[in-house]
Length: 107
Ligand code: SF4
Ligand code: F3S
Image (cartoon, rainbow, N blue to C red):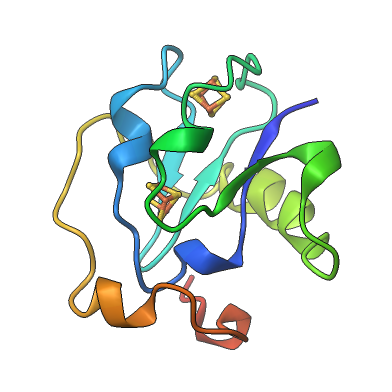
């Protein structure tokens, strides 16, 4: 099993999560982060750190967001590793909690 970054990270990208990951398995795209499921050791540390509550265990991904399991696996192979906290996206607080952000995911 692995942890999964889900929809509410899109256009927020607070990056608090990367600070606690002991195995550096976060990868960064233009407006979203993903977890490499082959590297994640299920330590649970990142889940409570996300201000957008976007990180969930694979078997606890919210209903309707199952596609993010595949997206984390796919995009983590394409995007670079991120190990240091960065500034959140502009207007991150405004986007936090908005529904239907998947269409806004940039690759
Ligand atoms: Fe990293 Fe642990 Fe989160 Fe997996 S559960 S992404 S190993 S901090
Ligand atoms: Fe995204 Fe939350 Fe990390 S918004 S970048 S999963 S802290």
